[in-house]
Amino acid sequence: MGKYILSIDQGTTSSRAFIYNEAFDVIGKGQQTFPQHYPKAGWVEHDLEEIWSSVEGSIKQAIASVSGADFDVQKIVAIGITNQRETFGLWDRVTGKAVAPAIVWQCRRSAKICERLRKSPAAKKMARDAGLVLDPYFSGTKLTWMFENDRSIYARAKKGELAFGNIDTFLIWRLSAGLAHVTDTTNASRTMLMDLKKLKWNPSALKILKVPSAILPKILDSDACFGKTKGLKFLPDGIPVHGVLGDQHAALLGQACLKDGETKVTYGTGAFLVMNTGKNLKRSKRALSTVAWTLGGKTSYALEGSVFVAGAAVQWLRDGLNLIQNSSEIEALASKVDDSDGVFFIPALAGLGSPYWAPDAKGLLGGITRGTEKAHVARACLDGIASSVAEVVDVLRTDSKLKLKTIAVDGGACANDILMQTQSDLLQAKVRRPIDVETTIRGAAYAAAIGIGLIKLSDIAKTQKIEKEFSPKWTKKKSADVMALWRRRIKGLLAGAY
Image (cartoon, rainbow, N blue to C red):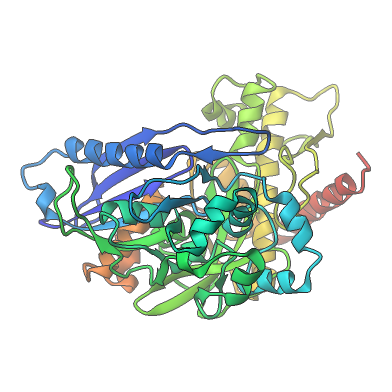
């Protein structure tokens, strides 16, 4: 066990660092939170220096937490990075200092620009070339907003004085003392600026969004050598960054979803679903097309869908209705009844994501009688989350024309057995929960290990350890009937019937 991988997970509210041995066991951990900034309604910003400080601190914590005489920081042979995807920054190429706050993926400031672009056939084609939809979620339109609102920044960008990048690019820049300005195909695919087929920056997109090519990083494979550490007090020089993936792509790899049709669901505040479609770029009007990864010189594609509210629904039961004191209590409460007794909950607390894309939709709690108890509401909440996910999985399955046998799950809510069993029943598929549900940061470690030849892509599945597998208990007819009723209720909600 003489070689170690340092994996960095730079998220929306915190940064984490894990150290893995050659068996992919975690031997050290570190985590630090950092502030969120909300200068205006609908605006969300980060400070790149605060992000960097949190990454540096988490790495130091991880190194300090390792116990064992065999480990030495000199034995770290590669670094993997996974990151919040669409958040981006602009910094000075000479000083490395940010010229403006980083704009976060949640920020809606470019909504009017998106509305304007939706009227343009060329912009619609640009979005299709990128596999995305015209939405403020993605980096490109927010970058346009920045240029339109600060002409001095735009002038410097045109001169090539500034560097642009999602958070992966910024971290690589800092780790390499500014010698590497690069990104990988997964992160580039979330900017609206990359052609999904060619895996190159799209000249048409740059023209439409008024982005100077001089600020863009070089696009590399996900297991390329992105740069080497230099000038850091907490890491020796020369450690290669050899694996980079956006967070949802990293989770797909971390779950060893390597074959066509294999799908993972991450249950966090929302639920994020990604299906591996292999070498074939699949299109869907109801889901996003994206790069799964580029490893070993080969690109795999994916379809992605989002449920805006999953774990957040449980938090609402806790904080809004005070039905439970802690989120973990919902399973025990829901287990007091066999079913919801007709109570239903549509968790559109932040609008509806895939496949409806209805941001103005409101949540709905219905079917209540004098016999309704707290346990029925808790059960309906879990049913609503599972039904939302099942509908998106059905979209991915239908539009990809791929068979679905097993769903890999991770994220905090996947620990709920009732939710997972309901998910299996609705999907009529097996649900696989690993022992290590930290699959995002594990995926980045895998990519780095593949990059240095420590493991082959085909051998990742051998390192997986499954904690529990759920199989359907319902008949196919019952599942179909429940989902048909769910869709009728959604249709009624969108039609204003409630």
